[in-house]
Image 1 (cartoon, helix red, strand yellow):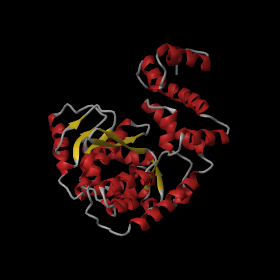
Image 2: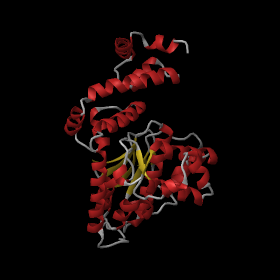
Image 3: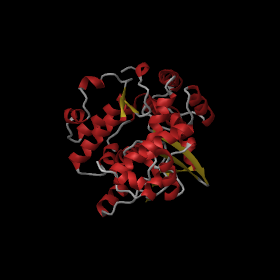
Image 4: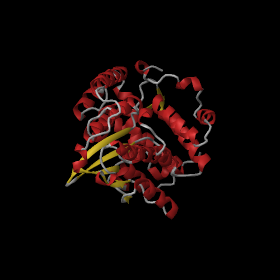
Length: 348
């Protein structure tokens, strides 16, 4: 599928990135044919480097590797086999960067050429900056694998900086609980060789502020302007392909945010790469609004969670951004004529 044929969906991953993951997995002995079969894909489907796949298909491959390896850290370990060119134009932009700050800005500017479900942030603190990655699909297992892979890759690429790693990275953060297995904890320490903290707000590399000015070992000096021109054209094609489908994109992304319990107007706009005002105008042009879309998808996700999960009604209400269980119950009854409890107990 060419870039100009991108379907109107908010959850896509580039074929180039999928091929990179498959290459890394095959180096560890995993069968590419088996992984493609798990995703229901023919090898020919991966021929177009400018093409895209639904995240659900790449998620199927991740789950297949997890089952085969029986290793919850497999994506983190695969990240250590990575190489910059595996990330296509974004990788080449990193290679041609003058400084670490330049490289980070390039990644953040063009990361949507890799996927539409991961967003980077650069937050400044006294003496430090946090370069985080936040993945949002409907599958928390896949989210963790993707985030750990990206953090591992970013840490690996710090070796391109003309400075000792200890002068660049202060610590590594993960928004997930720490593993209880000491051997798994040791894997994190072995890879990052710095403080690793869990249950944090975001998964991130925490960098020392002066490190942003450190120079890179440029592998493609003098090409930055040419590469940026190419990347800008690809971004324009992508935005053009998505035009007229803002509602479909917003629906897909907001649904994923609701499953994660992170839904908000601001976060939706951020994930779609637009301002809140621009999002409102796009939705209005298609006869909708954020409030209407939120109401529709809240009900859809509520039905799903009441049917297929063991979460309490209060927990479901909290996930759907209600202040408490009773508020959720009143809202649900207004829209369906029955309480969440009655719906859950309904036979069949």
